[in-house]
View (tube, rainbow, N blue to C red):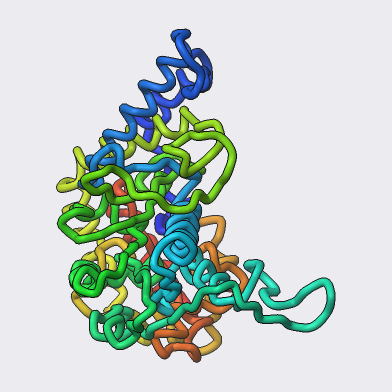
Length: 398
């Protein structure tokens, strides 16, 4: 099977697996224990990985908090910051995000806004009926351009006197659009508003420096850069006094500076650190390779009748290609199922499986939702795989 669903997850690098195995076999100590060698070795391995992840993000090691993934990081940052500022700070309680965020951001903001409590059947309760609640927060969801960009002016127009935070995705996970997060961050800095960005689809694929971007917070996952699943990081910008206080997401022990209780998954953290090291080491080579195959694939697709890109601008990260197959009787779900023994593709985000893409709908393509395919490349993609994909897509309708 040829794999073209790397925006959902990427294969674990052999070098990553190799460094993880000792921490599952011999070095199984708890890094929060003391004195004996297995605990010390585990602690040192975690801190070494923290340094490597920090380098990939352009952060300081003390600004990296390990979590179970970008979804947890996003929940921790948004809920933690909003809670602390609302109840322990100046009382501001308004957050701005976009309609095209990953569900981790979108549903977290909807939760704060009182629109849902669960990720499915959001307002149905066991007691019957639908219910909206007042959790003490307010959220605004700004629109996007026809190519998926979140504009600085849109964010500026949504700012209120009680705005505490803006959370915007850097590279859209469905259509690859790159938004001007640095420009939004400059606006936020002028207004005294914190900014968080989901960097999950950007890290390892483009140069990242969270300080240069002006970010206060950021989220990412290891499994999008050939690392293991179940591990991610939250960037929390420090100041002259260290890491600022925000409400913990998981309460219990004092791991991760008291922000995230629970025994650390040392093997996963070590794997994340190695994946980050490799991503930084091979960034230029991988960027050029993916760009070349991206251009080959897009050029080939544009030669096929009734196919168009959902994002036709130059503000698209190479390697994430979303296309509309506007052929009679074409249905993306049926097509993916039909070729599933040969190709791995998707209709959009894996976190939105089973429902129409909110991103495609926000682009104004709601009538094309069933005709969209997302193709995402990785550093192992080969030319013959691109050619085979093009051959299969050309055969649609034959």
